[in-house]
Length: 299
Ligand code: GUN
Image 1 (tube, rainbow, N blue to C red):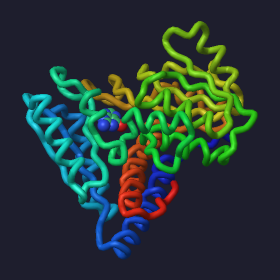
Image 2: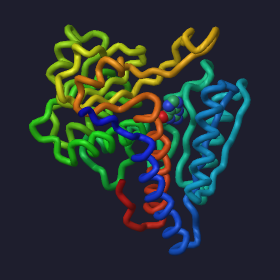
Image 3: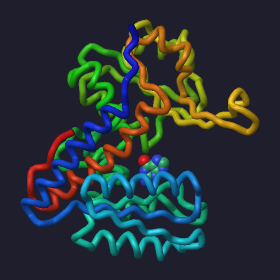
Image 4: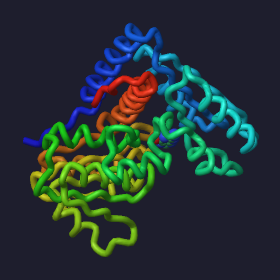
C-alpha cells in the first residue's frame, strides 16, 4: 500500500512544538518571539501568503508585525525598513515576501537582512552554513526544511545508501534541498531543464523530489517502484469539469498515476505546502532563542 504523506498533520506537530517553545521562552525571559513580514505591492497570491504567515505567527504566540508598502516603494525606502527591523531587538525574524515589483533589486534587499534574522534562509551566510554543515548557527530555507521532515517521516534521519534526485536548481529550493539530503548521507543528483534524460535519472531515485513548476510533469514511468516522491510544485490549472472558469491546484507530479507506483508520496495540496509556514515559525523561534543566548529547539 502506498503511504500518502500527511503534510497537514506533520505541520501541526511542528506548530505545536513551536508554540510550546515560544511559551517556555516567554516564561523564561518575558519576551515573545517576534516576526516582521514585509509585503510590497498588491499581488493577490502574495497578500494571501503574507496574511497566513502573520496569522500563524499570532497563533504560535509570537509578536507579529506586518509592513505593507506601496507598489511604487523605492529601493532606498525598502532597505531603510529592513535596516530598522534589523536594529529592532523585539524582531527576531524578518521576511520580505517575494517576488518584489520589477523595479526593485530583491537580491540586494535579501542580502541586507541580518543573517541571524533571515528566517527565509536566503542570505548567502545561511546558504554557506548549510553547505558547510553548520546547523547550529545557520537558518535553513523553509520549504526544503519542511520537505526534509516529510522525507524523515518515511526514512528516518540516515539516508545512507539511498539515491535522491532533486528536480530543480533554484536558490530558494533545489540547491538547499540537495544540501539537506546530502547532509543526511543520501547520494544526491540535481536534475534540471538542461539534464539529458530526466526520466532515466528519476527511475534511479529512491527519493524523488520535484520542484520545477510544471504541472504534472513527473509521470508514472519516471517513478522507481516503492520510491518516496515529494511534490513541491503548486500549479493552478483549468478545471472545466468543475464548471466554466474553475481551476484546481496540482503539483509537479501526476499524482493519480504515480501514487500506485510510489511507496510514499506527498499530495498537492496538503503535502509540502503546510510545512513551509510551519518551518518559518520554527526558524523564528530558533532565532529568538539564539538572540536570548539560549540553546535553540530542534525540529
Ligand atoms: N514567495 C514564495 N515563496 C516564498 C518564500 O518562501 N519566501 C519569501 N520571502 N517569499 C516567497
